[in-house]
Length: 141
Image (tube, rainbow, N blue to C red; front, side, top):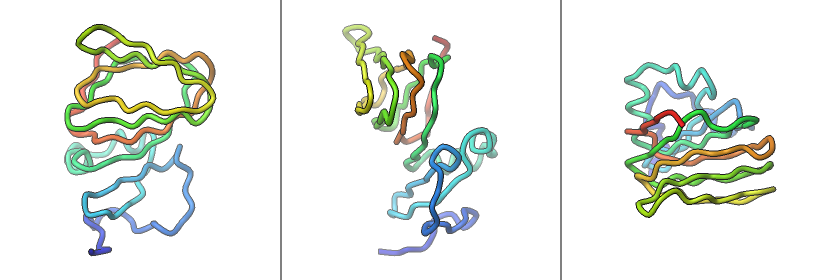
């Protein structure tokens, strides 16, 4: 097993502490983890970089004080959603209809690939997401 970074343009900072709200983690299929700038810096990366990164797993943490403004769907992999603190109602648009799952305090949900989902925020919340980003689609709530 190799410890070589799969994308040489990513910094090798694997032994440094990080703030998961400001720094995302890219998990390459080889098993190598790399830090990425989080928030707006991540979402403004060039399209070519996003296409490469989207093929692997991304770990990101977010703080929510309001309902999500969009629904999202990940066609290439399930999404692990972990509530660190707060309270949210996750809405999953399943073939039989919209299912509501409430998480309060702490808890997790695995959102199956291809399922549209959004969240209603019942109390300020922090959530950790693990997903394959390639092909992610969004639509207004």
